[in-house]
Length: 293
Image 1 (cartoon, rainbow, N blue to C red):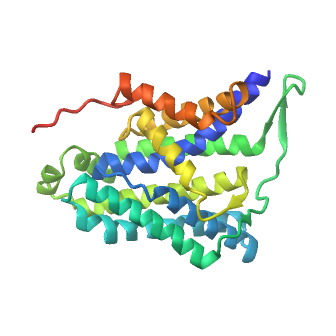
Image 2: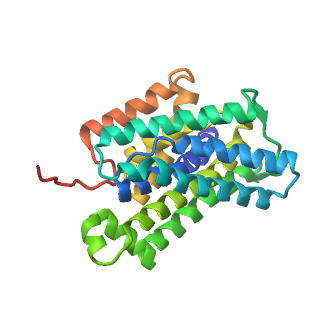
């Protein structure tokens, strides 16, 4: 029964990684760039939610909407100011710019809110559901986190596959020049992608702070790196891949922490990524692509 409890905890953690990984995989799938500032957008969302909940005393749903709104605008702004001018630049230039944006956001947070950790207020009733005559207890927070991830995954998949904007996204992912010739506004599609990814980052920030209630300017760094690892593990550019990679990474992390060593957990997680890249470079659900040179 303990193993089942650890497994559920891993799925909970993996659900947070999956939501964050969706932002990485959507931006890469459409714009073919790695937004390494995505983790810092999570940090900004956490601060906005913290001040909305704790200082302004706003209800939870209003605080969540405020965080989503701020992160969405921030994501669009980052894309317009930092990435759009580099649309035809080399991958290295985009990578360096992304790292620069990440450091800018972290230092801006230090200037605005200081380096002192903020303790996130309790936002959910930490009750339990008891199963198997009380041998297994699952908190409502775990259920909400997993359910939120599933709902986001389903809605995003339906949006990409069934709507006109989703079809435009898929067209831009396949061939931007051809999509432009067909009348699709590629710049608007890429901005929409950043907006969706950043909005999801705000949702992930609230779930992350509900689980680990300490907000610092480096809050999003490690979750961001692990979510990127999850995106690569599942197949970056694939929405189901981000979901699967996030869940697997969360389970591996919790199981490794419990049964092997808490100090070696991160090493084990990234070792799994290396093995996947060695034997299946496109990721578990990724597709191989041929490039003409």
